[in-house]
Amino acid sequence: MVKIAHISDLHFGRANEAALNALMLAINSERPDLVAITGDFTQTGSKREFEEASQFLASLSAPILAVPGNHDTPVYNLPLRFLKPWARFEKHIGAAQLQIATAGDTVVIGLNSARRARMRFNWSYGKLSRKIIEVAASIAERESANGKTVFVAAHHPFEKGPNRAGAEIVGNGGYALQRFAECGVSAVMTGHVHLSSAGPLAVTQNQILSIQCGASGGARERGEAAGFGLITVEGRDGVSIDYRHFDLNAYKQGRRFAFSRSGSEWETDNNL
View 1 (tube, rainbow, N blue to C red):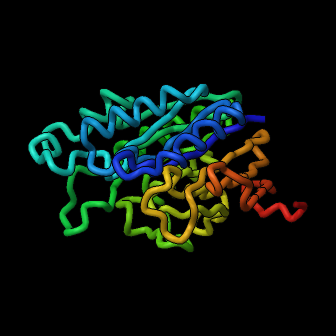
View 2 (view 1 turned 45 degrees about the vertical axis):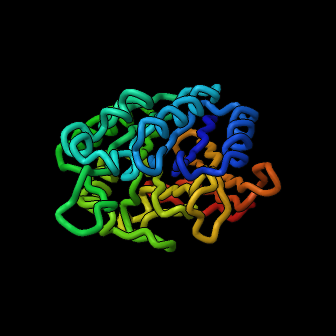
């Protein structure tokens, strides 16, 4: 089995310090094989916020895979935002465009779905280029053929969901899911909407699971307390997600989801 701690939307600059401290303690106590962080480390992309985020990451004992979110480009330094939008992220966090992490028999491919700007009023919406989708699909196909379970991590949801997530949030999301399904991707891990959920994506004929994390840092909550997901991968045909939520200075057990694969399709495991 492989254990992945999934956190997202820390929003340093507006984060709840008590929630962050409890988050560090909770994750380290679980001793995951990997911590996957799906974007929005900062609120405004400032140097100070990234320094705080870097210090938090240093307090985690497990390996880390991290992708940027739309808040991780500088908000108030427009020259830097347009000329070097990911310079601070890459200095303090890691590679911005593509990351790959292996934990046991599971491979996680991290992609940057955020953009410095969009040809629309709301710049928070993301997009994946077809080039990076093809790169990820090629990696997924190779790793799946080698017997690995493949996940993709990005900030923006790929498909319309039950909690304000929508296909319009990330350009080329539908195409990405089509290619990922063809290449053996088992699940996509996302954030952005500050609400957690898990389930098979019908648009992929249930071949891919959507695993969505809420706001882990206790900032900008949208009706759900700060939380993170503890994902257990049991080979290629079993995945469970235990959501933990911040309450009275600690992260406590919340909802649990379990899925098993029959053939190529994920089904909800009712034996809970």
